Length: 163
Image 1 (cartoon, one colour):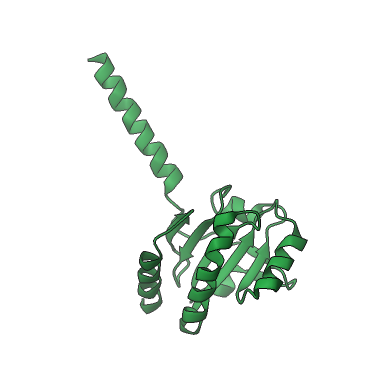
Image 2: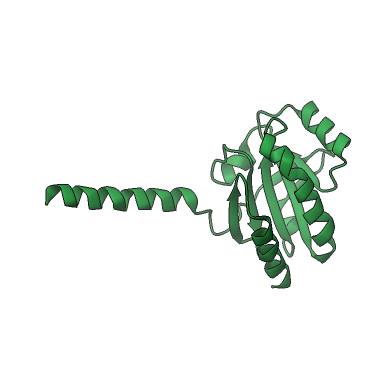
């Protein structure tokens, strides 16, 4: 009986830990992005748009592989109110990020998180790629970690844009 009780308690704690770790905050944090162009962009300035905040690094193979999809989504949905802010991780050298953006002609906003404050505000993001899809009211709709289902992402994005 004690073993069964201990197993039940352990399962409950594991489930609670997973829920706390896996659940993004309901509302996107009010952060300031430092863009490559030197502009300070407030999250509040993006209200009324659906936003993908994507944490990435030039050294992340999956991040680099996903950039063409991010560009395609941006080019397809930008006129409908979709914005992308790609946040380069604290450890990513600024000159690498600038070179990456210039050589690949990235069309959306790219920000540097030099002090790691933006990653911290989004739940202490450490792994890349990590992305947050945020609705027009600033609510986090979904968090994506690593690979993702592209068709599901587009369905979720289209629903958010229609809402």
